[in-house]
Image 1 (tube, rainbow, N blue to C red):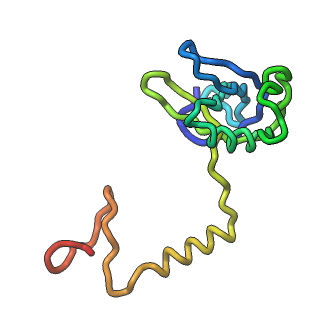
Image 2: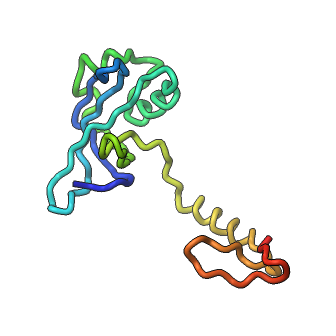
Image 3: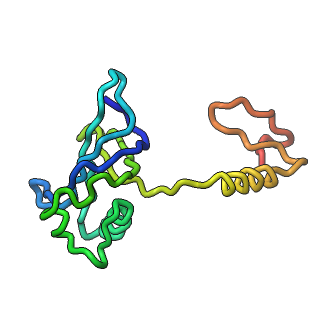
Length: 151
């Protein structure tokens, strides 16, 4: 068993399905790169929801899987269960109280080292020498001066 987090995975096969209530989704059976705590491989189905409100997100998720909604019909995913085989993706695994662990295609992008360095510089430059840092919950902070408001 794995816990919530972002994982690298490979699509094993794909298909279309629907919930008993009629909500359609693309089912992506994926093998995780990471083994569970027992050293066993992890396979999970990630869902790309195709509800009216989720179509924009679904387009982005399918694009990350190598499926082009503008040139391919969604039916291809059902007719060819190997269409997305071996595509490498990132999965966002969340623990949903009513449903347990649920996986979806992670939409975040990797931020390259150069961009990370620029962000670090900008964060450091944002600190003003004459102002104390704002307290972060769980960390000890400098005692504020004056009326007790740190900003």
